[in-house]
Image 1 (cartoon, rainbow, N blue to C red):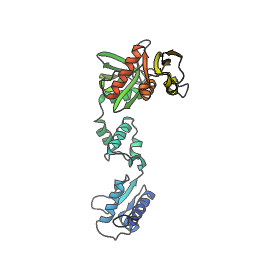
Image 2: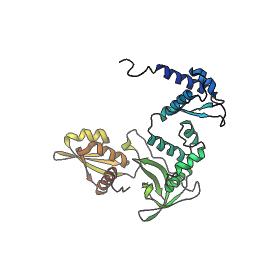
Image 3: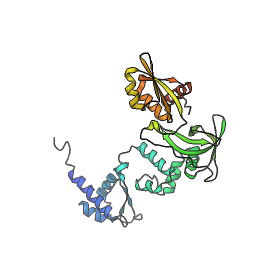
Image 4: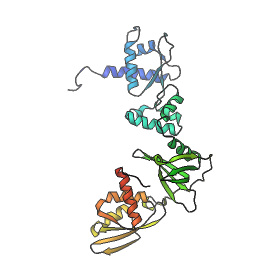
Length: 307
């Protein structure tokens, strides 16, 4: 049927649009309930029950509408400027995750504009959300943002780290940084495994040089210390390996297989591409590269991570 079961919804939808348009046209002073009743075509009845139902309907679809009137006074509604295009597409869990991320970033303005606060007082909303954020994560975020030297225990060893970035992947937070020892390389630490986390004063950490992305192909990015890795693949799969990993440093025949040697400076890119290639290729050596990839697979399965 053209209109589906039930009554025609065109009239109620047009009424909601008229109410929203009038509220949006008066963002500062708001609009009286009497005026909104007039716009909606409702009778001027005490309590404004029909208007209140429409207000709740608009709020359900992501608009923030507040009644500015004192108790016992005629209702006076104001719509807060909100970009609800993102909010209406997010589940409640996704909204909570976004709210937490924005509060960690101290971006109260974005929290307000997306309508993600859970209390009238943004400070109360911030405090409520931060209760669910581990103290270690808050300290790590502060260290990255303010260039603070980090001190913590990790795998039974005291660490002093110059932080670089903090990110989340599959619900796990990771810190990337360089230990305060000569010749140290960029490492990744699981934030939840840090113990006794402390931060020094702002700007006590040295800024780390940005990773060089001289080409578009991620395998060419200089993120990790270089290591040469040899891969074995059936000769028929060599084009697939080259397409995913780029041109090798050297190629050698090995019976029906080929051995392709790569200079790897971005381990994460190598791991991701090896997963895509699946059983078409395997790591021939060196052994640390094989162990590193096995640890990556174990972490992806949810086993004990070994960054």
